[in-house]
Length: 233
Ligand code: Z5A
Image (cartoon, rainbow, N blue to C red; front, side, top):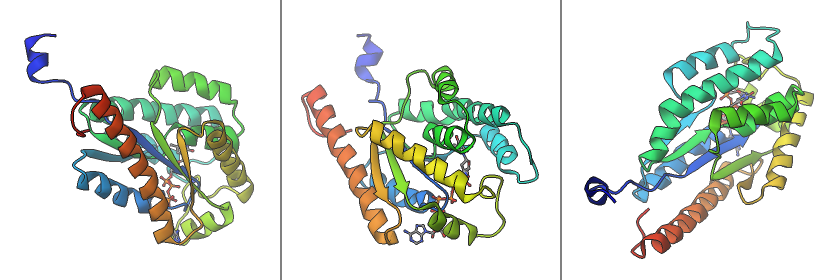
């Protein structure tokens, strides 16, 4: 070990947590409370979103959501999602994780499998190829899946006014999106926590809070084991 490493040990990589679900499931509503919980425990946190989360990625987001961009080619849409993600990873997510901060991200690649794979019908093997190209082996440590009937989610989301390019899709589209989310959650239960997002706001917040506390406890145990010391993260 070099002297500088000994004096300034590299911080443990932060945890990467994603929030997923269909429109109106409550992700944006609950992310602030989850961030406050981490801060209250002395954990540095970066909250971000996809598509977007860095200057160029936000410009790509504007293209993707603009409802006047009718008839966008589905493969172009897929590639734009991953172009935004590559920027977001290099400018925001990886630097934050490497500094030891925890990242709370409103949507990530599960959304691509659900929307472009389930909703648009693109081949998930192609999505997996792009996932490896753009992310290498980086995957979320925990994904909170806010699950509810699409009709209820759309009713909540559409109460807000003008629909963007995705919000204008049909109920059939959102049923397919939800089905892929649930399939993925059932296939990897160690990564996902299923949240009943149809419940009242306070119950949903409590479910999300518990899932995050469980991860914090696990991480504390691992850190204490690795250092043979106290509980810092
Ligand atoms: N997209 C994609 O296709 N592929 C990808 O790879 C990625 C994304 C990354 C981004 O839009 C779009 O990009 C997204 C998928 C696509 N579009 N869709 N659909 P966005 O970021 O603008 O949209 P969103 O992520 O779906 O955000 P949202 O509609 O705001 O949903 P939300 O964040 O889950 O919901 P919310 O804003 O927290 O709540 C909505 C309303 O419901 C609000 O008034 C709340 O007060 C209310 N609410 C929430 N929970 C409750 C409960 N439990 N009870 C009562 N009322 C509630």
